[in-house]
Length: 69
Ligand code: SF4
Image 1 (tube, rainbow, N blue to C red):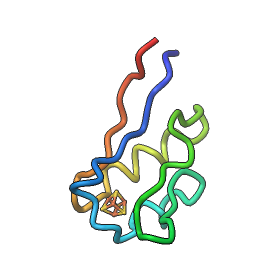
Image 2: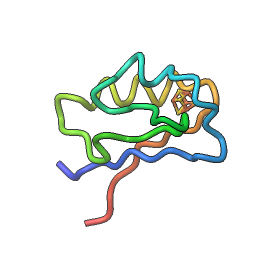
Image 3: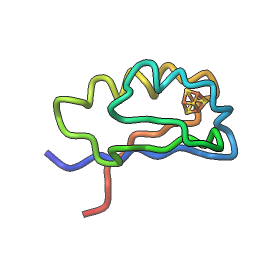
């Protein structure tokens, strides 16, 4: 299975930490309240929660897409 890549649109993210609450293994807010993606290419066992976080972001700032080879 091809890798998938998690990305955040920093211009849209409002740092409300909804995604951090759903998947703290994948997301964190830094000292300046900027969202950091801890696992840009989540492994298979984290994919379901990655999708849940993407779907739950109230700003639709997260994307999960096929990563380039
Ligand atoms: S849920 Fe969306 S808006 Fe909130 S911190 Fe995560 S990416 Fe940003």
